[in-house]
Image (cartoon, rainbow over all chains, first blue to last red; front, side):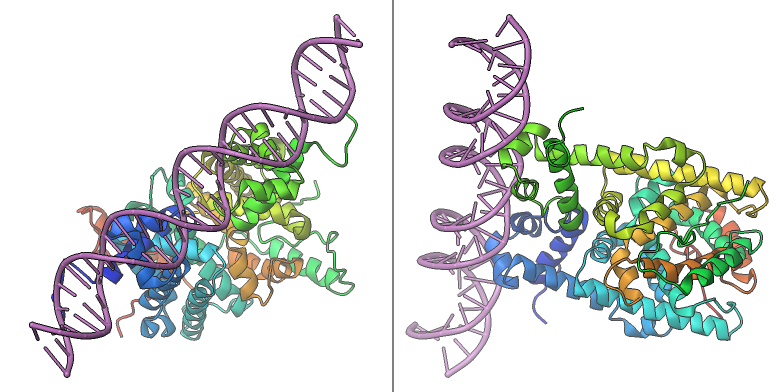
Length: 233
Length: 233
DNA sequence: CAAGATGCTAAACGATTGTTCAACGCGTGT
DNA sequence: ACACGCGTTGAACAATCGTTTAGCATCTTG
């Protein structure tokens, strides 16, 4: 109930400034002084509020996690991708958050692991729902499929630069998302291959090499997630 | 033709040490002294050979690019994913390279752009071949599909930690790749949905909102690359 | 009004950073 | 034998880093 200074509390201003800079330039490339300047405070105050630079990072991580995943209701009740939809809906405003989350997911922090696990279980339960509703066919392996669907859903965040560049934009815009929607939905609906010759070939190859499984699998020809071409001609 | 000292030239030893550390810890978190120590030389020699730390990074980038994309023959002649297959075939030895490439792709450097463009055009020509060979059906949008197939193929590199964790491993191993092969091939063969209701719904929604296209697209409900559920109940 | 806690700043500290510089060893050519 | 260029080192540089400290202002509490 305190008199709202300008906008929000000083501690929150520092945290938000840190999220912007950590997301844009990375944690190591961002100095405490830069955060302090952007927040309009002195460097010492940053340490006073968060103990250390790592403490500031931890506070940012926690904030991100329970601001966007702590909405357990939306998340656990089916829709992991709904979250990402919301983020991408008004990209302009969410850009700092998106950048920060993207950096989290490619780093190795417990917070990033928790965030990803939340998204993954959400996607898994969504798949369960849709399969039992008859909307989705039964995948070959529900767990692994849910894992990859989650990973693929995060591609627009983690590799946003290459995605935007590939579509002739300089950053993720609503136009980029618009142009992506149908091709991806087409891929998820009809698949990519005309028949299942690659699938059965890989199945046979894996079964053939699963018995005498040497720990160095340099001789089994099909361990690739992408189409093996290897035609006999 | 020079007498092979121990292994390779000093300049190459420094470059390889830098690739290991840049890939493992990141560019900003790696000091010139750390590179020098790992290479067994003095810090001054690193600068003497590469001019500056940024020069060292540029040399590493160039080396990576034309070591793995400069094989234009393999790449341009169809198989972008063949490259990634090779990398993942003996993961253990390629780990430093994989880490470095993963960091490149999520950074914003011209070298990373060149590398990605090479992979993308390779994937695109592979799709062209397979479509005209009747192996692959005609995608809804060849260019955008090729872009996303390329991005998806890089997921095991860029998000290797979450992928490995999701499969109960602590790093990318041949076992992780083996367990991934069939589910992904299944997804690319049969798709995910039982019918095309989402696809046509998204098509109609996009056509409906494409006319009075406001620059803030906050009201069009379907801009998501992931399945919109939005059922009326 | 006195007293103490709180938010905050300015200045400074030691450590580490990227980089420079003078010097040394050592083959090679003259 | 002498000079020179090249690869290399170790010490030193200024700059910047995260963090500490002393102190000021403001507000609350008794």
